[in-house]
Amino acid sequence: MNASELPSADGLWSGLRLATDATGGESAIAVRDGRIAWVGPAAQVPAALARGARHEGHGALVTPGLVDCHTHLVYGGQRANEFAMRLAGASYEEVARRGGGIASSVRATREASEDALFASASARLASLLADGVCAIEIKSGYGLALEHERKQLRVARRLGEVHGLTVRTTFLGAHALPPEYAGRPNGSRDYIDEVCGHMLPTLAAEGLVDAVDVFCERIAFSLEETEHVFQSAQALGLPVKVHAGQLSDMGGAALAARYGALSCDHLEHLSQAGIEAMRAAGSVAVLLPGAYYTLRDTHVPPIDALRAAGVPLAVSTDHNPGTSPALSLLLMANMACTLFRLTVPEALAAVTTHAARALGLQHTHGLIAPGVPANFVLWNVADSAELVYWVGQRAAGTVVREGRVALGGPR
Image 1 (tube, rainbow, N blue to C red):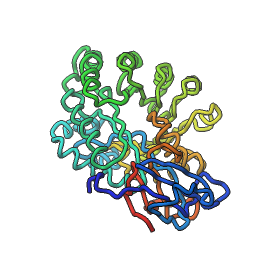
Image 2 (image 1 turned 45 degrees about the horizontal axis):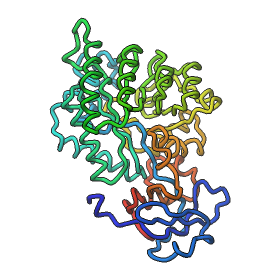
Image 3 (image 1 turned 180 degrees about the vertical axis):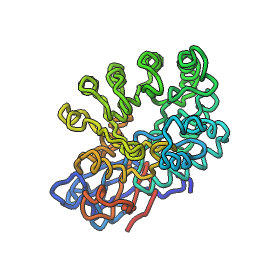
Image 4 (image 1 turned 90 degrees about the vertical axis):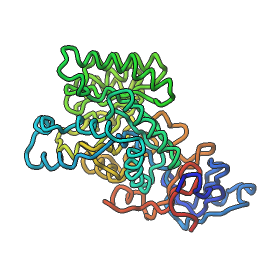
């Protein structure tokens, strides 16, 4: 069903328990014209908002709609065979020599049509939507050429329009060196020049880019190359993000923070200098336990130091075909608790408030407040801890997304 065909959520939603309300009292949410008009104790609903359609929650727990702030959802093919190869003992380098790795996804993405990419991404998105996701970031980075990066970003925009959710697009042209540049004497530098001088300005002018990301790592791009991309983004008025500290500490997070990065993501090897730079810049630390788990990593991000510095912690699926084929944000919240020792309140903020901030959406998403678009979830649980306790349960009973009832309905 197209989003425009979904029923309106306008009216008074009563019989709710706000997850942020420690008193446990009955609350209500009034929705008008797709936006939250009022929220508060059920006994204090303004008379003017008590008239009209009514939706009974029967004591359901309610949270803001979830935000998946780091995904690579649009790509061709899949890489289950590489997972099997790694389990059989193949190293990352061996997988790459056999045509695997990011290069495999680049080939499949380039070969796929826009419609084929939309169909496969829609199927994956359906799982995330059923989990209560109401806003998502989708990166490019599997095209690595203008026409194919454009194709990915166009599909991302289309997903938001058809499925009725907020999609923030991130240009990740600096994800890996494309095959046609491999082996050149100055291949990496030449490709970054193409990214900065042609690809990014063109795609930005077409309205396809909300933010710019770089994979700053020893197997990807250097600090100097990363800064070149950041400077180009800054000149175009676009915010930046960074994949950093996943395999080593190259100083990518500190560099990104100097450019006011919305977020720095992965961060297993983040230094104290990087933490301080992120704190000063207000950058969000995006934790990606799916990749940590899939790669069987053992180097935990410096959670205690991030906490002590007051750096906001977000959690995302990092959905991608190679290292995090995850399709449940709640499962990632569970993993963040079990593997990284987040508390339940931290985990819930990590997939709502702080995840929205990682996308620059902190004023409109990840919260339930008057004036913001109606994005909230009624959960079939007794306690908020159950949202990160259960493994595999689909606990979302009703999802209101962009002012429409996208799942379930009045009870």
